[in-house]
Image (tube, rainbow, N blue to C red; front, side):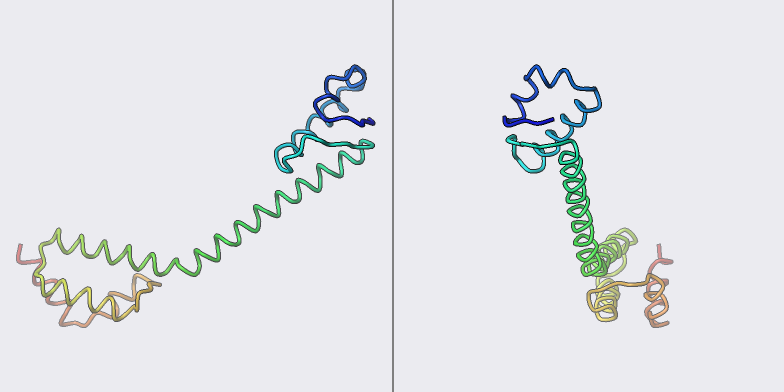
Length: 147
């Protein structure tokens, strides 16, 4: 399908409607891809092969963009994930201690211990319990049992 005009005038051309349905679909899909992703409505193709190659390369470019964005997201998540999880766990600990009405000094000691132990990053939940001193565990348990 040869055309020396813009895509819109090609679609209005009488010759366009004389071609097979598959060629019509291919041409329309080609124009849609280029209009959406290359911001160009002035497409001139020589053959069906040119259209197919254009569609394939544009699709590959879109897939590459998605892949690069996902890699960037994973990099950010890997870098900041433990810190965000640390903040979330710390917030939950504060809420839980407020709900259980622990004393202010006990709350401060638990949070200070948590802050010092994990340096603003959190990796495994089990580590908190394993690292707590027996005395601090006992104080928390005592205050919880007071209710």
